[in-house]
Image 1: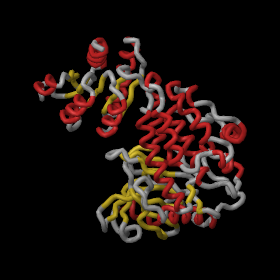
Image 2: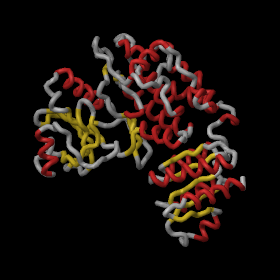
Image 3: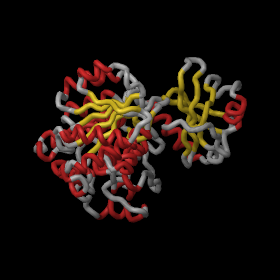
Image 4: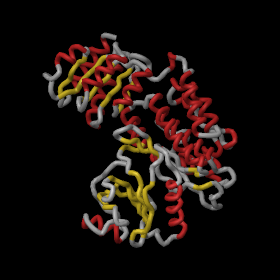
Length: 428
């Protein structure tokens, strides 16, 4: 969830409006002070709020008062609160409280500051980069664990998709959110079709109450995994109806058609995306386990990206990332190498990527413990070129010389960066 400038919805509940306008008492439920709006869906609004009793941030989900008179929608809201209240897992958003607020209802839950997975995938599309396979598998493993915890309590999410997975900014922890259409086993009612067309299992589309269950979430997680790797879902199109027909009648296109180096995963996806749930993996963890096994057996020559033919960028600033990706891709292309550039925003992501392969170069934006990171990088990948983007070209000169690291001054010059990358690639 990205925090946006404070903006209120058109129809907030009376109590929420008073709190947001005054910035003081009365508090929601006597403890939550609304700070700003962070998301809005068809059914309600999510606010960033402060729990004044425990002095921590919380996400406050409030049903739109226009819908609060609808018994079915209020029941749906209650279902989400109950589903979350039953779960205790590090990769499932935690609920704190539920109650009434003026003419509406709310529940308070864990506030996860970070970025939705769909935004991460969209950035890869726009920058023409790929998520490293090991990073994809690490996220999927944790999300599968959260879904497994839900399934053990007989709760099916029914709307697993990248937009409902938040990557926590500080830790990289993926968190599954939005159980708004979750169901307990036996709770599904005829006539209630729910989900998102690009990720819906065939039995959900048909609303086959006897077949909807954990394997429906396996299908949706497989669609999500497919999109993380291929940068597009298995069935893509402008019209939801065409996607629905494809889920029902068409076999999924092989993943390798979009990312040839991942041909070893095709059989795993074919099983996870089977039309009948009985033909799929029995659980989300079994599906991810098969993906990991298939990835481990992929011949080294087919791994993505090719060793010594890529660049990894560690930077949190979007503008810096954009410039580095553009210039790195151009330098790699000029050197006759695969134009594969990966972006990471946390040190643990960088170290995980280095453990899987040795890139041609790593670009570090000097915004923290850069020397420490560079030392660990040099120990893991002695032959990798290190580029440090810094505002102080005189600082730590001896250290950078010892580590054979090249520096580029900020504000960043595209020409200087390109020349530095070209020099590194020419040595390899």
